[in-house]
Length: 115
Length: 286
Image (cartoon, rainbow over all chains, first blue to last red; front, side):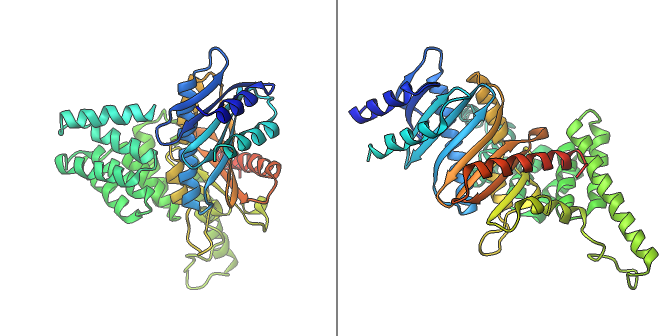
């Protein structure tokens, strides 16, 4: 894991309401690096987030909407965010009232720094 | 996870090529949007089990997702010749008939399906909705007869919007004139209402639906595992559009899309309105 990735995930994990931040590849759905609170099923989170990203990408391709860059899922007990570039995705699991705007900016920054 | 199921059924087929696991495998691949693979698995299965109604149903579902309506109908017809009361085929044919606006046939198939499975609430609602639209259509025809405004007794296509046409226009009023679209997809990813036409004038709802087939079920299962409760919305930002998804009754999904420069908050609002409208329509009240 690069220093940048460690720093970026650390920054995300410090945002109020964030329970987990990880990087994963879409092709295998496996987490490459993560910072998570105790009790968060990181592997399952990475697998589901990447599967959801893949679905979104295929649907957007079928619709002619171009590449998928960001998605947010609202659930009754939390929010899931995925930002993507190429095969790499940054995944964040947050509380329902987590600061979406800040998280989104930090996720984009995390991906940008990996280029 | 779906990958595990696919692996398990693939292994079962590798061990025993005569296994009926191909039916589940083909349907799982179809739900994942891997239509080419799904079709290949279903066709190979059919070669070994040509008199198995579920095998014809598996292939028909893939063909329906691919937009090959006639071929799908042939497969479901074949399944019914093998098993006259084959429930998935009755549902499939009912759905195809509804999509092309043949409400009488849709009602007949769904009535037969209900007789086979009276406890299926989704089927009950679908039948009631089709029945309601069929009666409304007949009333419209009668009304035109009474007013003497139809000529030569030929009302086809001139009796106001049919049920299928109304379904296509379900979201039109709330979408306005902007670059926006909305679809209601059933749990198999088949388009129930709304429309998506690309810049070349091609209807793309079926393709989008095929890619999203089963996504609600997958999300529900994964969120349960992650202890996140039930999902209420997914917002996706792509290069050229912002897309919103929301769950509706019976595993259906509402999709709205707007040009990328549309504020995300507005897309959320559209999504909420579309979901409310879809729920009314699913209950036969819109």
